[in-house]
Amino acid sequence: MSMRGWPLIKLLPQTTNFKFVKYARVAAVLSVILCVASLVSIAVPGLTLGIDFRGGAAMELTRSGGQTLDLGAVRGAVDALNIGEVGVQGIDTDSSAIVRFQIPEGEAQNEVVQRVQAAVGSAVSDVTFSGVSVVGSKVSGELFSKGLWALGMAVVLMFAYIWFRFEPQFGFGAVAGLVHDVILTFGLIVLFKLEFNLNMVAAILTVIGYSMNDTVVVFDRLRENLRKYKTMPLRDVIDLSINETLSRTIITGMTAVMVLAALAVYGGAALFGFSLALMFGIIIGTYSSIYVGAPIILLWGVRRGARDEEATAVKLGMASRP
Image (cartoon, rainbow, N blue to C red; front, side, top):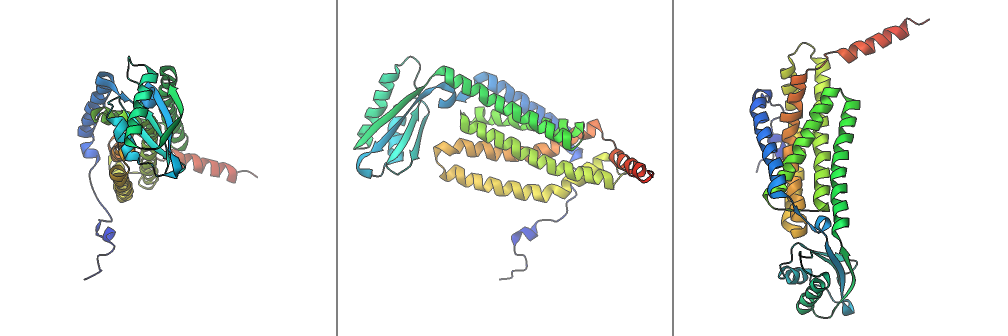
């Protein structure tokens, strides 16, 4: 067997010449339609809030004698009660776990807790319960509002960073991409009826970070090419910059998606929604770097060579000093 083409990454083209800007208008129309549809879906039917934001109960259970606790059996027993979202997480040793579940509207908390304990006791022998706590609607409401504030602050801080590092139009292009990615990720959560909980907030924050990282790579190469090719049309400079960073973007994105796919398959129900949202966010973040952030710069325009002129003026001023 010939190893001439190994590693397989060598089979990927080193240079590409895709005309991305040519399809910017079509992509813009598609993005607007998807964003509007996502915003409408957030209002109707709305997000499926998890225990963190709807309120619920949590309790610790331990199997006596250090026996191994079957987490799958515990989850199945509580799921059979049809009381909503259920979370089972092992702690410390294999004999202990924390069970989190919702309190259906109109039902007494103590009665639901007793039903859960009876169901788990029937599925797993020699188990004791302790540390029962209930998260009320007021606390869950505060968590929800703080989660949204965290997302908003992340976008604002990213905008400030891009504004400081580049020019204002770069900042607006980056923020437009971030808002685009966040809205579409929310739309995915509603479409697949995924539980919106603190894990989802963490996933969206990660999507924001990944999208910004990819956007910065493209913008940095664009800034270098603007200085290098002063007479080249802006649309051609944008296409050149995206093509030059395309292989890095694809390889990085594919690597992350493969890891998250494995996590979605083998991570269980608790991590499935988190992994799915991250995979979608990485793909859509790559798209937005090409078809949301860069086209805004094309519409706005840039000052070609302005910074070079300022740097030259400073050097001349320093050289003229006695």
